[in-house]
Amino acid sequence: MSVQCETTGRRAAGAQMPFFERYLSLWVALCIGAGILLGQLAPGFFESLGAMEVASVNLPVAVLIWLMILPMLLKIDFHSLSEVRRHWKGVGVTLFINWGVKPFSMALLAWIFIRNVFSGWLPAEQLDSYIAGLILLAAAPCTAMVFVWSNLSDGHPGFTLSQVALNDVIMIFAFAPIVALLLGISSIHVPWETLFLSVVLYIVLPVIVASLWRRWLMRDGNGEERLQRVLDRMHPVSLSALLLTLVLLFGFRGKQIIDKPVIILLLAIPILIQVYFNSGLAYWLNRKLGVEHCVAAPSALIGASNFFELAVAAAISLFGLQSGAALATVVGVLVEVPVMLSVVWIVNRSKSWYEAAS
Image (tube, rainbow, N blue to C red; front, side, top):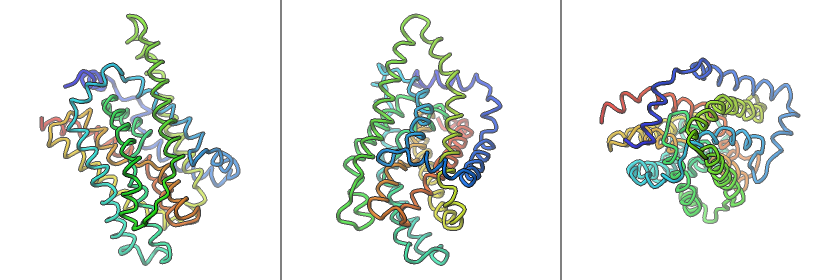
């Protein structure tokens, strides 16, 4: 077992779950309800917050994401990133799920459910657009929020960072061809501004800030203790930012949820199946290959999560703001946080089962 995994495992084993985290599912449900309610009571306020965006990246949400991901990045000893090469099996599984399974499994699920099973309950003229939106959602792996999920599952920080960086490089070259292949569109407009801004905002800048902050904290022999105090103080702030993000996301889309509840529910079903299928497959493959749990957990989570900013921007640029494709990607945004928290819960609760295979 790697030093990083041993340290994380000891911390997780020795810590009693706080009251707030023990009932996290309850807080998530309350925040979803609060977001929908507040979106109805104060639509102007949420419209103003929603309009604060650059290249489809919402700035208030970006601030909250920073508060969520900095604790994870602070844990990374950047001098030991070379250790990640030991986890090549986990890297291989994650890449296989992200690029060899996820887009194609979503295309199949969209065809099964949208084109066939649910076609009688959906507007016939929007069926192709809904399918396109779901494919766009699955064609790009998540970036920033993966740090949050990995942190909550005691994942290996260095592995998570290196995997996200590798996926971003691949995404530059693979996103457009995969979407073009699955949608049958010869010319795909990739929202490069959104892609570039998201990478800089959610990876490059936070990594630089965390690296400098960690170096300052570790400046002398008391560095480990000082770092742990900062992480302990930031933990409740990070969780609060996660819950506030839920309130904002559901507040932004509260009117759509009230106006089109059946359509949103039907579009959410293939997304949910895909998330659990991809995360479960990644988790199982890692277990079969003998990958450590602190690598398998983020591997499964990276394989399931989506880059919703890029998906929304691509759907709007290709099909328009009021299209079924745009709505399908928005449903992905709404589903992302609560369903990924459930996957985190599963990988945490199944750790003893996972490690029994080794």
